[in-house]
Length: 347
Ligand SMILES: CC(C)(COP(=O)(O)OP(=O)(O)OC[C@H]1O[C@@H](n2cnc3c(N)ncnc32)[C@H](O)[C@@H]1OP(=O)(O)O)[C@@H](O)C(=O)NCCC(=O)NCCS
Image (tube, rainbow, N blue to C red):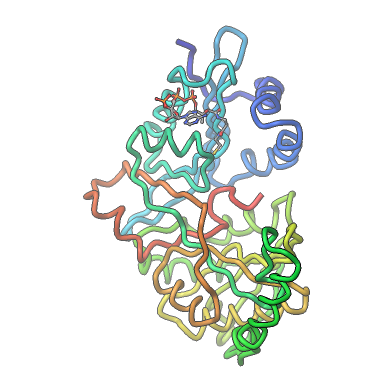
């Protein structure tokens, strides 16, 4: 059996070569662009280096599990957790038990091992290893234009007919609604965001700590995407924020809501942030807005704002080791806050 060791800076070239073989050249290039930010600059990186394990056979690296350490709030307690991200085994060594060894090594070293947006093979391995399955994270879409309902499998005539029939409904759903409060964009998360987190954290049974250090790293310093951040202020304090970006997809232009935070019972606050995004999406000519939300309170407000549930492919597994929890904990996710911004899903 190969040795399982922690990543050292000298391993970088060999790991990049393995990444190219497993995920292809384009993904490897994108990974190189993100690497320093993603692994070295994470504010929760341990002092002895990135939380990455390698499977080494002599001089050869044949597997990796690269993870993202985060602080996780679970029922009012904060624990050291890590999202599992880039896991890979050399193609000729797959299905021989090495992946399982890497998964178990990661899990043994963290207070909670978490996975989001999994590939088919890793999801199956999580299932085989009986990791608690808390997903998928529901996906919501709000149509803004007739193009939002286009389907590539339909003929031009059918697409036109559907567009004509649904136009009044789209206009109703997408209509502008009033905002209650002061919203502005920012380029830095200051200490007020940490105080917001401290205030709202107890209302979530499960959420990654979203303090200023984490948010600046995740949404300001990311080298591969540029986010817009809007903040809702009341009396000089921060009542909530939303992170989003616009992108062109094969079927049209989409605004994606990547992350947000507000007290779940502050309905006016979250609705105001959603209405801000509506305006921004319209100004950017988006055909629709997409968001992923697990928390029942936020899901309800998304629906109230004209969002519809669509099929989600964002699988989510979570295994808490630091606290003893009954299996029922993983089935009751209504007060868990998980979004597309968690882990490294938006890349
Ligand atoms: C995911 C991965 C790391 C697993 O490593 P591995 O050494 O093959 O895993 P193990 O041999 O320990 O476990 C095998 C189990 O994993 C699952 N699995 C692995 N590859 C699979 C595949 N191609 N299709 C379906 N299930 C697969 C199955 O449950 C399998 O059990 P089985 O062989 O009894 O059916 C490896 O398949 C890999 O590198 N995949 C490509 C990269 C990737 O998708 N990474 C995940 C990104 S989220």
